[in-house]
Length: 113
Length: 115
Image 1 (cartoon, helix red, strand yellow):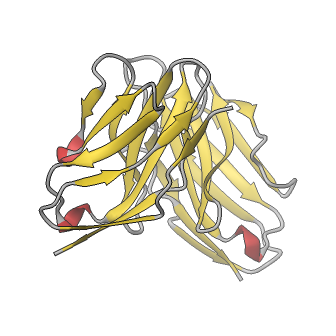
Image 2 (image 1 turned 60 degrees about the vertical axis):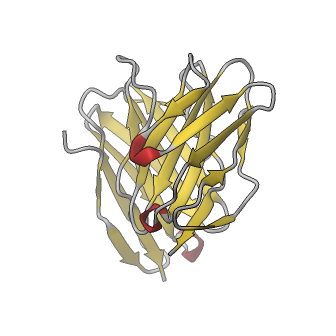
């Protein structure tokens, strides 16, 4: 069975500082990995994905994530945080079959001015 | 494209009443998913369809929940009778296998409150 762990419920970072939101996964076979962001009272919005190829993937709003197969991790990063990045972030995984995404519990990011 | 459309956006009802949530997936998408989001449980997959056929409904919490997809452009999630513990945000999402896109696209959600 597939699963995702987001070990931090909350991440606080000062504006302008780099941010990292952690994600580890478990899946049989090769994973498809995703990050979504949810702003208050909104649906989930796709940020980026890893399917194959370069381990460092770049996405929307300056976010990037690094796929690490040996550590089964897919941490979300941004070099310089903005207050507007404050939101709920979800990591998700599925295997190469056409299965639904399995989501982590989410990490609330708070960027403080 | 208008994206995934859900209605209503908000629903307030009393315990015991029937509730019907509606979803229109993105045109051409052949997968449709229903999720429920609560503070306690996070995002839970309830059921998903492929080409209008239910594939896995193991996430549907009880027989009070049912979902249908009569055609490629419409799906409903029904709760009958509703209970206060059903209060949550219900999301519909869709995806296609026809292109290199792998991600699921989510609707804005329906916030259900059962009094």
